[in-house]
Length: 115
Image 1 (cartoon, rainbow, N blue to C red):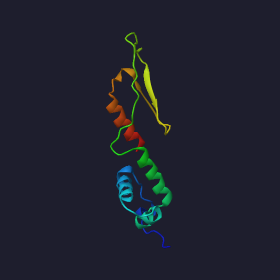
Image 2 (image 1 turned 90 degrees about the horizontal axis):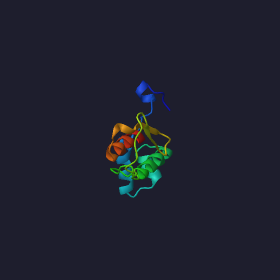
Image 3 (image 1 turned 45 degrees about the vertical axis):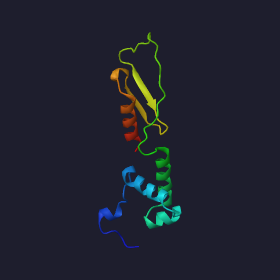
Image 4 (image 1 turned 180 degrees about the vertical axis):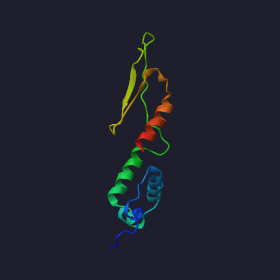
């Protein structure tokens, strides 16, 4: 195998959901086996499995779902208190309880963190 002549040739391409999800959709729409598809697109099978799993867990366009929390009228938020969401990936999102984020804003933020 020849040695790379430039730094760019020696550094593997960093793949992102933006570049991989269309490939996953192309695979799902076709009739190739995973091995064939990976060979055709110069992908490592383990990397393909990683992105396929990620794609299936995060249906494109779907926001993470949140369960509603009902607070009684007597509930109050103490000054300086925080809300915390722990994602399955281990990421912790902590924000001031007084921030007033909508569920849609939180879903967008969390989706951006998971990619």
